[in-house]
Length: 114
Image (cartoon, rainbow, N blue to C red; front, side, top):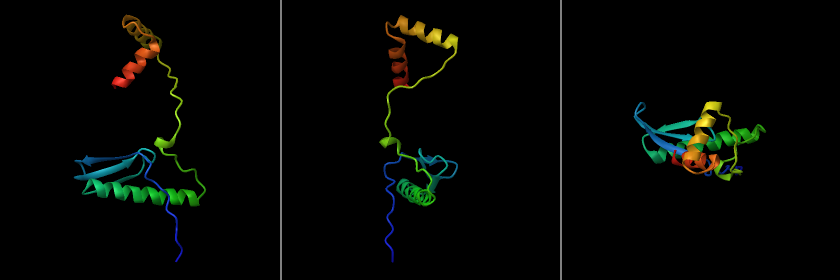
């Protein structure tokens, strides 16, 4: 009997919540948004989804497809660009000036509070 190595899927971003509609817990994975698993307990939902993700990753590897990298292992520069309308830009710049800070500091503060 051949010993098949199973991919480690523990570093993916999982969430388990109660589904009132299904009357069960539902597990989801941010890196695989089309996958979910329902179960009567949180543990069973997480374990079921991890097994499903493991099967999907194994299949993707066998098919030569690119497997998503876990968010926890990705590098982030700390920078991103966003385009906003002229009036919103003006409003944000005004609020920043009124608070005595740069536009960047103001937006970081607002995003951190979200």
